[in-house]
Image (cartoon, rainbow, N blue to C red; front, top):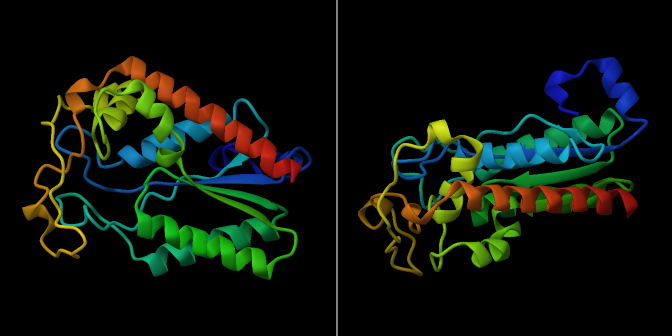
Length: 237
């Protein structure tokens, strides 16, 4: 049940079938010269919408903005602070809880460490505050990483590379603008660098040329199955 499409009466009836809400988190973030800025949002939202066709669950509209670090200097990347993300996630969950929802799956299409840490921090705070709440925090990209390693040809594939390009080719092929060049960031770890564009000009981590629609479909379906499994698990706990 997509919250943006149902009425308040639909919501009340839905509560008799499930008290679980999936909240997808995406970004407005560069994904090379070939993928849309909403790549993270498209991937995670399509996955949870498909999962909602297979199991009774509420799905919130996606939060389109996230915490950006290594990509924040690139054209088109528009991020928010960790404080803003934590506040938004906390407010959404507490408001939904007041309407009768009890189980919350926060699933992010963006796998940034600081971004995910902010969501996990909210989860830790709320389970201490509210006795009968259950929260899961998931990186959708990390969830499929091992499966991706079985399918993709690019070793150490990451941002806007073979995996993500394959998935957008399957989900929104009209938004794919050719293929960016193979690239890997040269950020001088462990230093925190201000001018990240100097070390990562194209914003790609991997080889988009190896992407195919079939790989994207297989990864999409694998992710859908995992989300369905997580919904069933949180409702049994």
